[in-house]
Image (cartoon, rainbow, N blue to C red; front, side, top):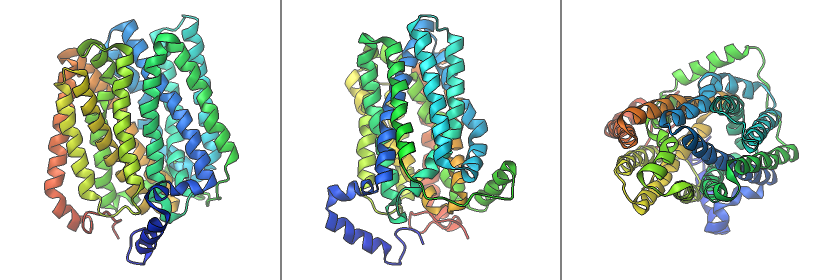
Length: 434
């Protein structure tokens, strides 16, 4: 029975939270040694990844002056998730998740090293950048379902919501720290220096993965990878709440989140704040994301979140429309903080709810569908944003995505009472269909 059920679990958790105190309760999952190591390794690695992402976007813009190529790079970096997320989830349910992550992280480290070397020797070309982005995206597509499914193996079920929120916090703290450091490092170390630092950062997670002990989970026998994928799709098809949940990151990925790949254009051409200003702007989004993630870490259960998920997504869409019209650095910075808060509020609670309602033997496949909706659709979102920005302008591209998202989430909010009845959503919480 899930957290927050009327079995006394939520009462026990509330009592323990009170005894621990609010700050200790927020970080209670760190009492699990393996989770703490996993969290730390991921944080350091993600700082390096965000440094590389920002430096790479700036390098492409400086060399090509093309918003479309920014979108194409985002497309190629995310396209493998569109194809391999579902097989990756089936593989994650059939293999040792820790070993799978070691392989994929090592591959991404080597690709970052190649990118750094080519850049430092001044022989890098746009074709090579796009190829490396595609190969790194392929490794990431195989890594992400195992990464998502590994977190519940490191904590007790009663602390799962807290662990997922803390995991989201580390990702978004890295989103705040990484771009800010990259904006400062670009001036002194150049893009190659950012890529070398990312290469080293992968070692933190690889070492953590070698040090942790993951409880064995039953290896899925019988169906092939293809059969396991179909089994997961049939399970989701019978659970309308999961379908409703997955539609939220799908719309964000296609139309809302592509604003990120256009931020170099905002910083250089629209706000005229340069590379360091770009780092601070992205740091604002990360700051908001951290605040949201740490706030969610104080929560003990995943109930009564349906309305909050949709409300947060609606505010995100409004902030995106306003960002498209921003003409000052500080107004844009404030809106990016709001975007960070609402993005994490929406995605973390969606992720948490899916994790809680997923049977352990299906978790890898369900989280692969989450990755497909969030990351797999991202290449299409990046491509459309880059193309629209190239033809109609960056401001129009961002405003269009925000407007379409706003209409969709308002419709879901209006239909929420009906969705509760049809999808068995008691209150605003979400539970699997029988």
